[in-house]
Length: 385
Image (cartoon, rainbow, N blue to C red; front, side, top):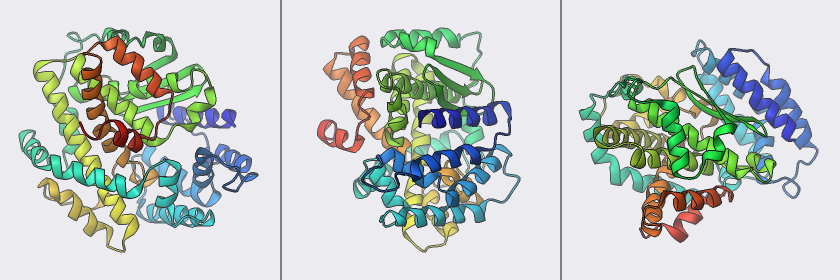
């Protein structure tokens, strides 16, 4: 099975980065055929169940069509496809006796929907006022959101040697063994990390020229560090990583970098970007929860949730194009959930280990091997902080 999954990752990497045109439907059908032989809850692991649903012929054709549209700058109107994908995922999930796709995802990710929704709602309530002030500070509108964030404080690369920065960060926490396993490509305007073979982890990001880019660099590096340590002893464990644990690891590393590697105005602005981004993903998650569980018109829901930022919503169309919505709409919450837990964990680790970075790094290595149920981890260890 690992061979199929690595092949899919490799083909997807080459499609994104090198503009290849591998037909992902072929390898997805191979994955489905392999898993379909089990096809009952008693013999499928949670990660296998999720893959079976995602690679079901009724699902995968639509999903890959949308994926190609993403890679082709939305030359097609994908709104109908997004609805069709939601319907297909719900239908396949019900065949496994789940109420629908959301219910299946919560099961596979070890998440409790009500607890997750409560955490997201609390995050929005707690941080919305300060984030609205930041939208004014950086002259953000909904139309210029990504452009403005990516261009906060241009950085002269002569002043920041990126390779040295990465090397220094990894050594501070005792992660230097990861260096030889990760290849970073500065190519497209994207943040993307994957693993295409046992010893080949790859990252693609835009060449860093702003604070946003540096934050993206450490976010993707966080994925790479997790992929190394979670599967250092058993390679198949890489394929069992839940989305919530995956994003938690990445958000944890970007916050550690912000605290340890940067200072002054640069650190402050990176914190602003983090706060703005994870409020956006929180509102996206809240929108998704309502969209999947109500009959309300998507455009109305879109305005209801995002207008909380105090921004004028002139264009309703991005509801079906924004973020991961079209490909994996039950993923966006993982970013904000990761931020909630990362902030608390950093506070706990600094107190426990007296800001000894090597001890913190050793603790993180052990944590990354566990593929935690992160809400359970939060409730048992971090909630009172």
